[in-house]
Image (cartoon, rainbow, N blue to C red; front, side):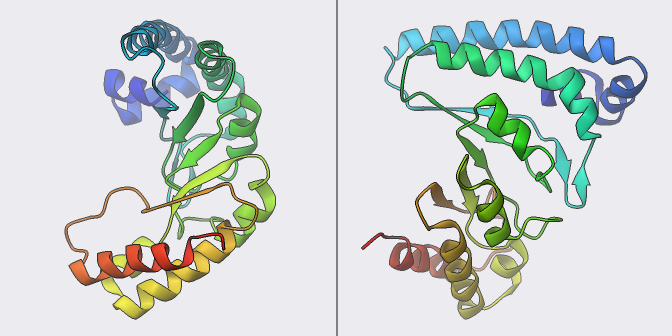
Length: 211
């Protein structure tokens, strides 16, 4: 769906999804043809030496979804599910999909699990209903969390001690029984002090191991 934003613009794509959803569906059906061809060509060229394919599709912002999840379920999910099935058909085992969407995404996580996205990134802690222990409890048995290492406001404006405390808390939430890839929430932005970056990764290294 995200690529329809590039075709029509963010606002217009949402208006079309509401008033003329058949336009968005038709665009997505053409886009998925391209991406299937791209993925199959890439997979062939690297001779299958790939473990994870990353798929982008921003569906939410800080306060919640950019669309009603019922709209997603009706129009977008069937196409996403078709693409997921195609990717998984390339290899019988051990080819995983990491789905990227920023924002408050808990309304979509059951759909991601149903579609068979094995991992979800970037786990934007601080967005609505994105508390790490709650996420792990509700969804951690069915999907891998990739990200969520330190809240962005703490990483940018806290002290190294604040960063270390937040990283420890988040790892302790996500770590039990596996299913977590420790990584920053999206990109590290320019205002983040270098000492906070060091504190984040040092703390992750010290606390992220299973002993």
